[in-house]
Length: 435
Image 1: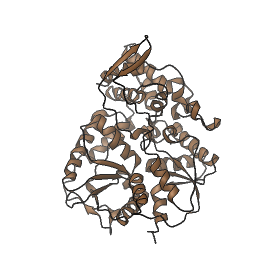
Image 2: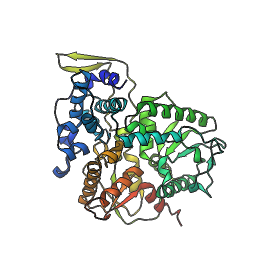
Image 3: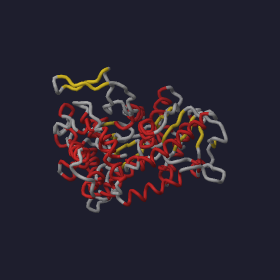
Image 4: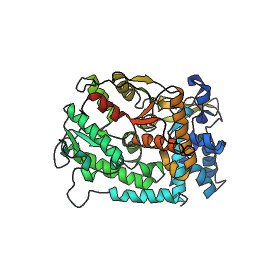
């Protein structure tokens, strides 16, 4: 099946013109020559094979039967954050699904039994999230004392989806702060509690297509049941969960109509409508790190039916014209607007931002199989934030926050020197609710 998907993507794998965009920021948007490198894998290995273009060449070799999948190839395929940057960069000049090729390659390696054991173990652990527990679901510990509804037993309009990130102690604190903010704005908020399933991202990002499809379809069925008890909107704590639900579910599973919002989108709307006020000044200088799955990877897939045409033996077009996902329509403005709404906060941008933001290194299970590469990307991102004079890196994804923190701690034994903060924590502090 994985090879069949690759064969269907032969056109996309063959479009590489060796321009190098998949390795660096496109020249027209370069802000600083010291921060042009963009692909964590290529940055670390300095080898074309470890780039979007290089992996497409390997895909063509597999498609044409010139080589067979093997461990050496699998090592290169999995030494990737699956951040989607090469796809965004490629679409700067052409319509080519570089990310789909990369994921089909990964899925093929899984089917051939070439996946890293640590990835296999991770995906196996997801089975405990497959269904509601046999005992009655309960509110999570972080929700104690809050006026949250336990759905589907109780009705609510907004579901707070904490995701797996809600398991760690620091994340429980952030989930509790988000709940307080939503309740303070007068929203009727519910949670699934101990019955909340995983979004399935670990299976998707590691190439376990069948497992991800099963999880996604089960969750979509659950969303349908929740709509019957009034749930109209699902608000995710994690940027990774939001991108998975909004972008990958429509691609891998059956359709659903429930609105998916990230916490920053909901909070920004509440602030702008004056249902939530940020009145407590915070005297800090911050910069914002764009999470891949909240940004370029959050665009819904294009549902297109048309014909590809070739003119003059080289000009490729679509009839009718096709909308291309460039990554530019991700969630970029909401978190920035929130930060700018906090009084006293000085906001500065890094050099690589929005759809051209550098991946923190945490995606795709890369930290498990290529830790030097993964933490090297995180260290590079921290250096970039320091270069623009920020004293706090703010992110809207717990995975990014955790990885950036670990990246500092793994640097030559040095301890953390720059604060990494979740945007929800800053918004909560500015709201004055902690008093």
